[in-house]
Amino acid sequence: MNALEAIHPLDPIIVVLNRPQEVVNIGAVVRAMKNMGISHLRLVRPEPFTGDEILRVAHRCDDIIDRMTIHDQLDDALADTNYVIGTAAIAHHKRPQTNDIRGLAQDIHRRAHHYHPYRVALLFGQEDDGLDNHALDRCHLVAMLPSNPAYPALNLAQS
Image (cartoon, rainbow, N blue to C red):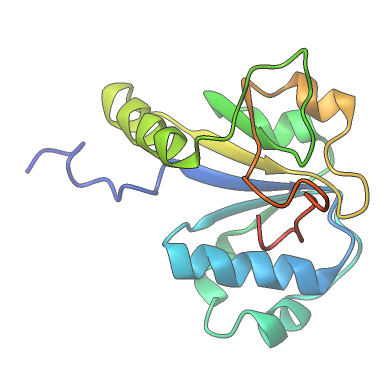
């Protein structure tokens, strides 16, 4: 087995939460990451919190919390990434977008094994406003999860 084959399939993925407001949502994201096997989390200007507050929601996720980094600027959190995928509930016509989540997952996997090292950021916005234009400008692609058109906004951890 060569070094590339030894890479965990989800290791190139970094979850970036831009200005998260609620510690319970950070905890829910950490728990979802643990469930899915994603281990890299970066927070940009979160509201104040403690690791213990996150652990109330994200039981046995100390490894992700210990590895988590906090950044003052979004650009710093994305500095070492090659590809940024933003998430949105509504279409942003000036940006490439997809709602083919399965195809997107295959594309990420292909890129991660073709270009090494390769880091993909999954960028999530604030709970009440989503990604602002500054954040969207950093995205190579915007992913829209299929949902009820009458109520498309998902909770941070659900997306």
